[in-house]
Image (cartoon, rainbow, N blue to C red):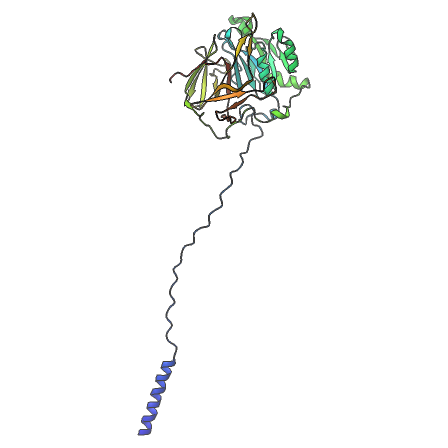
Length: 366
């Protein structure tokens, strides 16, 4: 009996020892809390250089040139601008219009067309005055007029203009508008230039049509393709320029963001389209204008300088500027600068530019 008990005790002790040496139940490892990883910051995109279409109009900055006109010279046409000659026609299509006083402080237009293949029929064409081709040469433009002040012959010859004068009727491109004659217009208000014939005539004569290398960029510095910026300065929704015998007034059209022009109190209408002349940019350049002879022919300072005062009007604002064109260098560009001396950037679109006596601008309340 004792032996049996001893055996049971031994078995029990062995069981206890075995149980004590057995592996404990493993505790579950703590669950690691997953932390959402922050997305890697995308690298900032470098600003892409603006793509300028090949057919960019060098006078307006708008891509509307025909393929045949890319890299070609513009055309400058002298146009009668007195009230008795209204309405003109063919002027609405001009990309830039200069208005400058002539005899008696009446004014004359020089209308610039960037696409020499798309010049319209223009009326009424008038004669040349020295300061107009002095400006047109800065655009490397063909020059079109009807008649000339004979005292300018040597000057015009020195400019080496590619000039087309209605007095000689080159290519049969000039004539008198019979409907105007029938309506009783004075003879000097009836001359037309048929610009639709111009490209073929120039090409047939072998005249240079490619624009010179230093004029292959835009004529002005423009804002971005999709920018329409207000001129820095005071608000300006209307202004009037007093040339003496005539005035030019402009009223801002918010819908089209253009300034609609009046001539001596009347809307200035293109007789072919029926539309009022309208400009994205209006630039007024104050300068010295004097009388040089008994007839009343003018001397106009077209060179300006650091102190030459001007005004840039666009998108409902008016900004004071300075302007210059290199003295004694008709082939130089007309440049505009802000009050910090930086070259001015203007909005893309049609531009009106006036040379006028100092202190002849008023900005009536809208």
